[in-house]
Length: 436
Ligand code: FCB
Image (tube, rainbow, N blue to C red):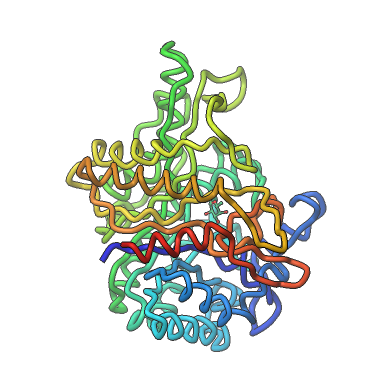
């Protein structure tokens, strides 16, 4: 069965950050620091999904998706990141999973969508190798409770973005601007993935995936400098995360003025074997390609040259549907037999949606989704084994540093009243799904 779904993440929708025994996460800390998010928005209330999940489940049933990707908040399950499970936290996800199954929707659970327990950040967070072990312990607790009913697990969401935005540039939690000194965060997350994958399997979990943010990289010109910079960026964004998972080895980065991985990463015996634990699928999150030019002196070994000549979303992200086909066929060409089935675990766009008495007429989003699904089908036609597609997102939600300013939902949320209004794109997706 091809999975057609929608995706969300705990901190972006749940709210109720001090309820049910939940501990603080790095996103609670970060969003409450002055100047970190647009207009100082926080996820304190978000979509209040913690209290309104049954209504949201009804929206999914009405939509007719056969799968729902949601994330489990580590600080709900282990408020300080270690030790015994918090029964109220586990109970929330237990009820959600049962509700999904009763509605005929396959639960797809992500274990880490960036909301690290603050107590672990206080001990160094993902810069500290021990957090990988902690993550596996948390995975074991959750799997013991839910693996009998959740058939598909995603360990980490976008370890590249968490490393680059959270630890390299400091625009996401935990707000560290370490540039390339953030590289250990890649290895520790990947190690955490591998150890968690083993813990999931030991607890009888079905399929184990990871969701990587992947981007086709376009050199700004044919000059040698631009080509080298593009290869450097491709290595850092794509290969640093896919190669060890699929090939059991890190890419060589020394050619790009990035220190060799052996110099910057604490890679111990057995780490790469754990990281390369066979996957049942690769989750791929696609938003746009990236155009890369030669570096400006003194900074990173590349420059983001921007993409013009395409429509743009409210975020300013270029809309390049064929980039999805290019990405999927590119992964197949790069990894061949080593590539497991692919699930597109996120794809979608933000727009300045206007709520009128007639609803939200988000024609751009409909065009975006239709064209991306077409591109996905072209990739399948070219022999790529794609088995799922999840729209980001079910609901307008807390879009990280942008707060509530970027609306990605199929369902409009009025954040003052929490009223949900399905947009035209919701109705389009419903009809599309009914025809599958
Ligand atoms: C991805 C994130 C997701 C959402 C979308 C727009 O990078 O995984 O939480 O913010 O971008």
